[in-house]
Length: 408
Image (cartoon, rainbow, N blue to C red; front, side, top):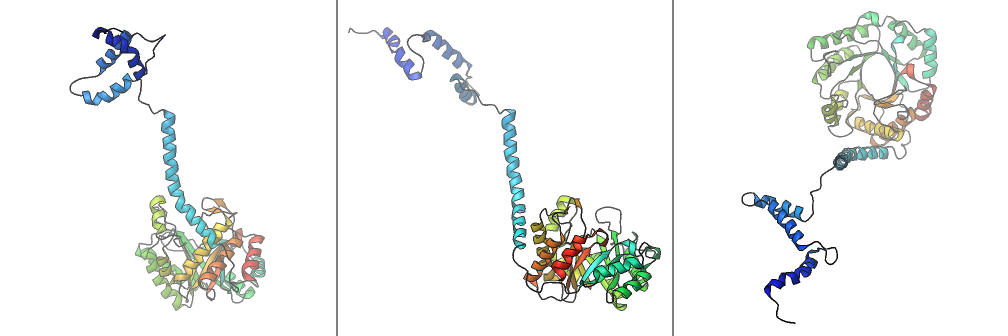
């Protein structure tokens, strides 16, 4: 082996360098000159001077055969789907927890004796005072109600005009009905059911904030009681939680009804199933729907009877609806004074629409829920009952469930 010249050094080390860089060697290897030209071209593409540092990384990456990965439409779609699923999960989790709690409310056995206290009520349609009903109908109604717990009949005698007035022509047969009921059902009271749409969520309707409107409602009440009704039952909707004008109206009405030894009764919205839920629902839908428990108590203290409209609950299953009614019963009992009759509404009608599922909101589920709530909160309360809505939509199955599950 003789002494090697410097000129031979690069040529001898070329295979060694190729092995280190991963370049092919041996047969089929690219000529060294070709590689040099490629490297020179890549280096020539790299900027120098100002901005060289920014381009150095991508340029070197390109020289090594790497290309930046572009997001395809499919990749972006998957990313959006994942994000949507996360948001949906966050929204559904509280709902799942709440529905689970309602299902638990429906468990257990009602306490013994949680049956009718003979303080129940029935909503009747307008046909009973406008001439469509006869003595034969009253006799049939008496057979239906005899031996039940129904003590009050809320007979639709309105609706009120938007200014709070009501012509006597709206209830021309009121006197006949009251006499016939007293004859066939001694001890059952007949009240005038007066309602109207409030202008709380649209410009149309009755404006309680107007003192003239409230004054007219009081005058209407005087005339209705003079016609022989033994009480007035008001159903004004949608009535927002905290409405002070409504409380003021009730104060004025109670002065009139008590002076005539008559009843002041109201239909009440449901109570917040979660604290301040009416505020959340109102902000998202524009329709608060629920009352706060505190406001429910303020209304209950001003009336002789308060009937909770414990239907149209949006619950999809009987067990969830029954648990919801049990919760509503407990919430109402906690703030209704012992001097006020508390009635829980039963759905004697069958519709399928948003907010009401006939297969879920049944009389058996509602009665069981009422009994469970009563058992847990105030099992011995005397001034308590259920209110049946409504006579003209009720089926034999509804009446049978009421009789078997609540009366007997």
